[in-house]
Amino acid sequence: KNEVEQSPQNLTAQEGEFITINCSYSVGISALHWLQQHPGGGIVSLFMLSSGKKKHGRLIATINIQEKHSSLHITASHPRDSAVYICAVRSWGNQFYFGTGTSLTVIP
Amino acid sequence: GAGVSQSPSNKVTEKGKDVELRCDPISGHTALYWYRQSLGQGLEFLIYFQGNSAPDKSGLPSDRFSAERTGGSVSTLTIQRTQQEDSAVYLCASSPDRGNYGYTFGSGTRLTVV
Image 1 (cartoon, each protein chain N blue to C red):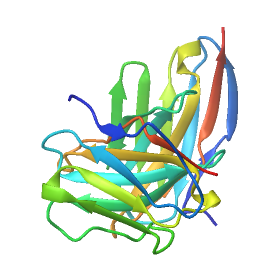
Image 2: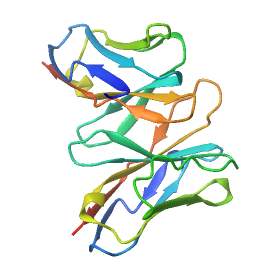
Image 3: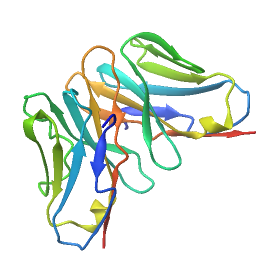
Image 4: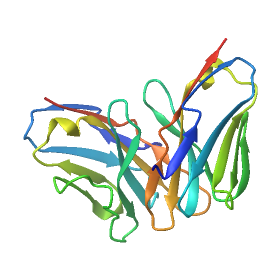
């Protein structure tokens, strides 16, 4: 069993749609990260969360520590949002666990 | 520079040879991480340096892998006696590791063992 589970694995959306990617984890964590990997392979850190909610532009990330669950939302999706989104957690023991990623394709 | 710099960007090596990969983190970042991503696979944590503390080596896949960080800045990941399964993109990231900061990733080193 993976310590971090993401869903869906693949997601295709029409431009403008509201998108949600989910992440569940089974370990106690000190922080959760959402990463974005572009088709060329470059990785960008989107958010680091330990509680509550963060917003940056059209991206919103939430975390529920009690339920061990986080969501990444994209409002008014655009083709340039097409990427793989990875959920990663850092446990209290400083172990790092990664989800297998959600491949998002936004169609014009 | 302003970002995390990795070198070389590409490396092709023969099986059995040793390779060294370099990471130059953002100045002042106390935390440095090495990951790898094999073809079609997710990210895999390798090793974590935090300041002057002993590194967390729990992710290193075998004793052929080692890493050091000199002077709390530049890090070198060394793979001895490379095997074909070592072929991957090796990514370095750094973080101020205080407060609510995330990572900054380098562009990676693509290692191909032939």
